[in-house]
Amino acid sequence: MRSDLMKKGLERAPHRSLFKAMGYTDEEISRPLIGVVNSANEVVPGHIHLDIITADVKAGIRMAGGTPVEFPVIGVCDGIAMGHAGMKYSLASRELIADSVEIMATAHPFDALVFIPNCDKIIPGMLMAALRLNIPCIFISGGPMLAGKMEGNSYDLISVFEGIGAFKAKKITLNQLKKIEDCACPGCGSCSGMYTANSMNCVTEALGLGLPGNGTIPAVNAARRRLAKQAGMKVMELLKKNIKPRDIATLAAFKNAIAVDMALGCSTNTVLHIPAVAHEAGIKLDLDLFNKISERTPNLCKLSPAGHHHIEDLDAAGGIQAVMKVISTLGVIDKKCQTVTGKKVEENLKTARVLDKSVIRPLNNPYSPQGGIAILRGNLAPDGAVVKQSAVSPGMQVNAGRARVFDTEDAAIKAILGKKIKPRDIVVIRYEGPKGGPGMREMLSPTSAIVGMGLDKTVALLTDGRFSGGTQGAAIGHISPEAAEGGPIALVKEGDIISINIPEKTLTLKVSEKDLEKRQKSLKIKKPAITTGYLARYAKMVTSASTGAVFKD
Image (tube, rainbow, N blue to C red; front, side, top):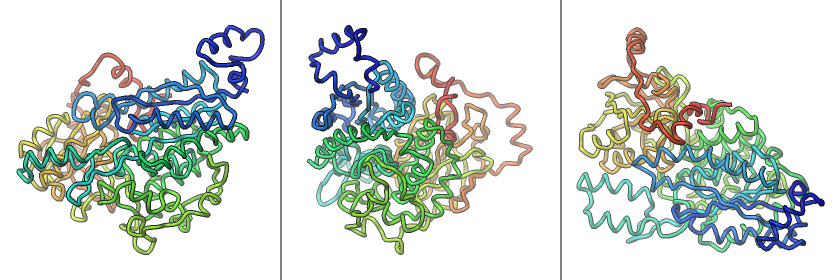
């Protein structure tokens, strides 16, 4: 066993003594030691209940003959970090999480690992660690939050963000906003729509590293606890068979995950995280691969913010396995891929079926013939940009407008809420990329303000930062190269005309090449707002959003 390095033989008597100091018996020490990576904390609603999930995982491990050894990792709540300097640390925490798991699982050579994430950057951070370490692993998320209910309507976190703009536009009263605030997030779990957290939990299941149900079973359902026990038992089987993450997360499996991403209409953040996870397995995923798979994969689901359904509805409709079964007939799913069930994808899909065709549409009635995400290129984004095309209204798919330029998110929000943005304007927010932020903030506050003020059908927003999975409208992010690297977005001036053509996958700044060259020569790059501590080191090491914002090799 791998754990023999720290527990077996005469020379390891001191090590065993330290285990015994924590109450471990000789019998427990002799068994396989399974690291249980618990991201529970009292900051993130998706993680507030993870001690319960962890206890169930540990019970499953013990039932299967292993000894669980729990250790923690940090977790940032993107919703609470949103709209202030705290959001600069969210994406940056992904690398810190991966590194911390690597440290713990190498300093203490566990035989296998169970990862218990739930929210935004914790999931990809753990996935990166799993593929880096490449010892038997399984993922069990905490599950999605239920949608809030009030007066016959459903609400979620995005309802509250958009409610601010609605109040500013005098569409609702302060009392109505308070009622939405009180009901939108009714309890534990990852926020209830197809936002980044749930997107990544669904992607983990599609990738084969989480059991069926991992992405969709609600946090409050007893089925989630049973799944946790099954995950604890299953990791012992993976250990016995020596099935490792890189045996599962192959190039074919990543293509499966992207196809599911497209069918579901997942968060644009998946375009950052999936390549970053693949990178740890030595697999390079070009952004154009997303478009190629999207062309073959229709958008079958519209969950909040793109539609009125929530993850609980997707679960009741058959979940991720049902979606995979439907699109498998198109040849976009490799059924021979290994999964943590110990079975191939084709075996897992045998019992899957769609139970509600209004939530998971059939192939002959998709929301669109292409997937939920599109990669755009052009002179404004030579290395690519990303948009959740399934959440863009038909009238904004092809659009041109006047640039309104802001060098920070905060300045843009002030202008939007101050009614300085007019129909047909294109809001440009720059110096919010991985290096320039530093940290690549999510722009949920400005996009929600645009929606809340009724401008989402007439105003687009472009940024070298990124968006929440809860963003809707013509919001185009990850523009690369970013402004801090001297990318074309740094050259945009107030009043420039920008052309957006999502069907043609283009993003064009209507300025001559000669004028752009002149602007480039006189460009003075804005310095990051934070130049000390972890973010300063992060800015020096991080690469472009087009490469998943991973660290330099």
